[in-house]
Length: 202
Image (tube, rainbow, N blue to C red):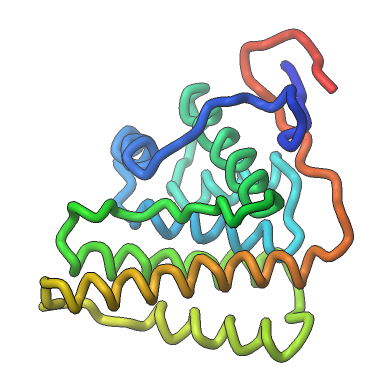
């Protein structure tokens, strides 16, 4: 098996999209929201989580898997780990939440964001990180309020689209801020195990 530094030039260049993540869930017959898993990962990383082994355990638990995870699913989840950490640590605000796209009905988009926020809070808590300051505390409270939103019967239209863009952008920037505040010191990104490769990369 091969290990690699997910923040180096040796990290895999592949990316994972929301649709790819949905495919992983479908393959395993998992009925929990895919966005929640990416929120869980993001919150865990913001709280200082870095171990690829621990992440795979969290993901398997979320997917409710009783047996070994297929290699393809392992790769997708490791790619998501590397991709998300690179985006959180990168410049230019390149972080993207894995949510239903803009062609999806508003109700589903809002629910996706709500589930993402719920996952974020769970992941941050699992990492055992305490809020660094009042700004972080306030953002976590805002995410908790968004996690409790009921989107049934959400309206469509230009005004709804503007509101959606504003709220989703707030959540995205809040996640970046929380990561920055709680990870001020540069830390080593996770050493990840790539199944099916016998070359060790550093």
